Length: 80
Image 1: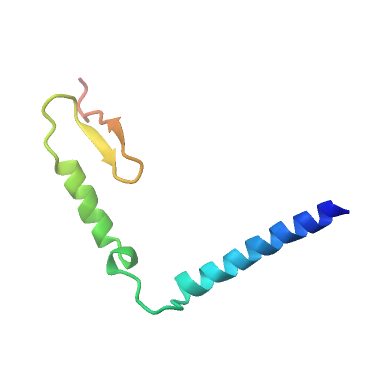
Image 2: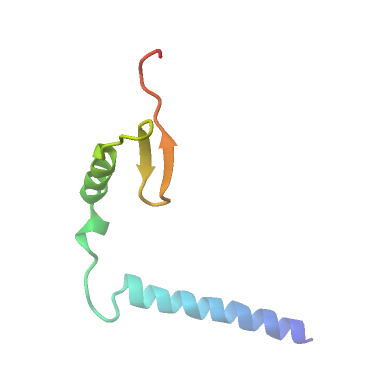
């Protein structure tokens, strides 16, 4: 008997949180605008160029993913 109340209250809390998120984030309840860095891909492209242009002196060239901060070895296109 108590399980149905617990499950219903958890579902209701998730629904309430979703509605609040929609109102505050997407509908801009408190005003504001979406930053232009989020709207366009130009910022992401320039950030990627910056990370690719970093000089690497002590290790082989790597590609840095700025989101996860993981480094991956870049294989050169030549046959070596």
